[in-house]
Length: 221
Image 1 (tube, rainbow, N blue to C red):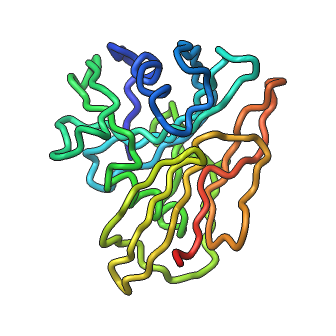
Image 2 (cartoon, rainbow, N blue to C red):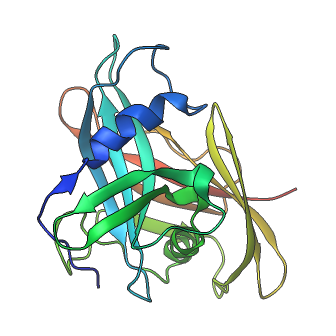
């Protein structure tokens, strides 16, 4: 299991996001307005090889008239991914591990593979800030049993509604769409005929939390 180092990051993840977030098509803030960000939830997944850090962060922007909570899947690496410059959020200096490359994890094959494993019940979510501690508040669900988790390919598309991961399974070439809800609306459920979901707690404006769909799976037409 991943070890969480309680140390410094320079710049911090929130500082990296402050410049990256407004450029995304699903960003709800006012153009030209600097985000005011706070981490308000999330969870981690383990990389079976122990090389890539994987985090699904909920971050709330309070710069507008109403707070908006975004989901940002991060991957952290000790070296850059070849050909993935457009997915790079930035680099940071970790107080223990040294320089780390921070990516939009929807473009990182290790994160996508572990997200799919979580959905089908073969990966255990971990607490965001505590080492070796499962997070039982995060739930993956898939309608079918016995699904093989290996993926042959992934195609990523962003739009105003969020991020779609079109995945093809290696075992049978089946095509599925994993939709990442980039804007988290606490209490929101899965729409349509969902084949699978990831649900977790997201913050409400009054400080309480509500079960919310972080990701939903549909059959690709």
